[in-house]
Image (tube, rainbow, N blue to C red; front, side):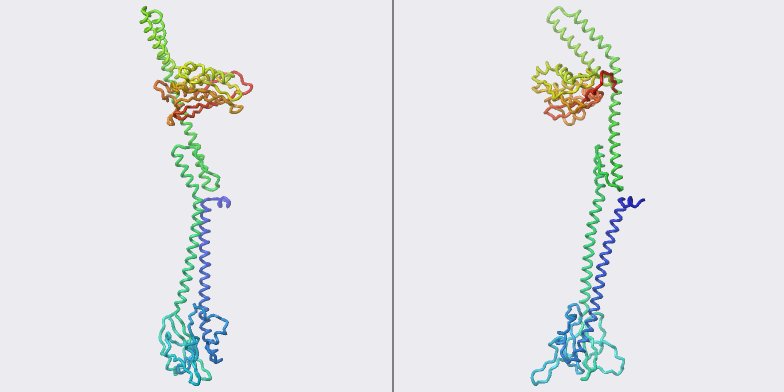
Length: 512
């Protein structure tokens, strides 16, 4: 795999992110640990320097015959003032146990007037266990009585160390008093706590950063999941963003291709279903035409013969006889019309295409319902927006389309006052739009998607083929038809027909 493709890989970027976060965390932790080690080493060195400074101050006191609290005031190094240093006091004691000097002024000798100098006795001080700073090699070395015998002390416990020094005035002992090492332990604990807090802070920040990037990386997965649920619900128009160049982009592109193929498969399935319906209708229509039309013609002719030759002489009976024969002929005509609808829908269309004025076809359709509309108080009108180009269409087929639509519109008003209008407009130079608008009862939302399906009808006596034949005729002309309706507020059927191209004349066209 080439390096650019590797960098664009979803898995590679996720691994790089995790490696970066791990390296950053370890690097910061190493930095703080290194700082802690340096601080601890510095503190240990300061402890050693403090002890050496205490001994040096004691020696300086013996040489200069000045008190320690006076000498330390001139020392520039403030080491002994550090609260983290274990050195708490420095004493200079003679062989008799007299404290002849101390960092703490209350332990220093007192002299008033001619009175002899008063010394604080070492034995009177409350000090931690005392031990020697060095090991003497002489076996007969005698220590002063005020120095207690050596005792074992725990490591890091409070204590005092003495260091003997021979002077012109006799032996002196420099004693450095040390506090417990717990102060160092507390400092180390605070440093460890601070380091742990820093580590937690770094981990928190890296967790937030990692979470943010993982959320960004996995967002396409959520989008795909949502889109998959929509597809499972039957919506095959769902598309997801596929601009990414990693595995998620490839998956999104494959998903989009899959939904497009599913949509095409659904369309093919619908077309196949319609074709199967058409085949069934064709076989049924052929059988009906063969088995029923001949008897119907015989019945119709017989009714004519009965009415002309066997009508009763009595006027009242003759009227009843004529009315009954007319009703029989009307029923025969209705059956014959249903057969014609079956045949018209099932057989391939043979269109005689010619140059037609769309307004003239609309006026012919309205003329058929003018009488009935007038009786019911329904207004009919044609509205035209601008000059319309002619269309190349079959006259009878187009008139059948408009007739079906306006008859349905009048019946939808159901005898109430309303209006039926045909609106003609020019969408562009290549097509003509025809809208058939009524103010009738409308179509329910559950039925509006089924109005063009064969055999679907809301009328008790309807065959359900009227609008199916309309759609088939429009499809055969290369146009489209759609419906918009609100229950209780009327319905609008919109037809888009291609305009006649220049140079086209009359021709035959066989539809499927």
